[in-house]
Image (cartoon, rainbow, N blue to C red; front, side, top):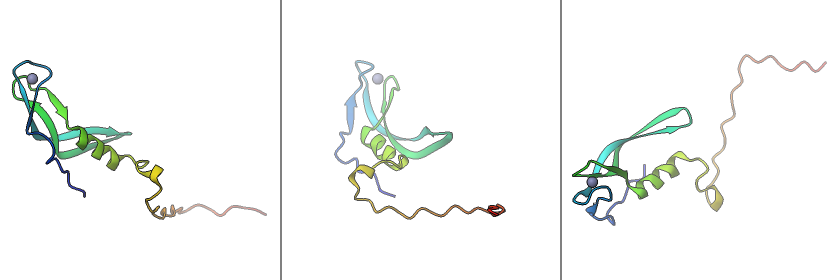
Length: 99
Ligand SMILES: [Zn+2]
């Protein structure tokens, strides 16, 4: 799995919800719904305010995650080698009666 590189991010940013707070990177478990499937991402970076507790997910991490979760991502570049689709196994299906 590709590792997140957050070295370019500042260590803390002023909170936009309260005047005195600063938001720091914390690693939390991120929950998101993918269709009908609940996806949990442990150690997900998020900005958490030390005053009001406001939580904001890191934007680069969010885009990284959506790349992982969205099978359509990167398709427009056409540089990705399309992996061969597995042939769906059909079992116990009677042959077509063409007679
Ligand atoms: Zn705050």
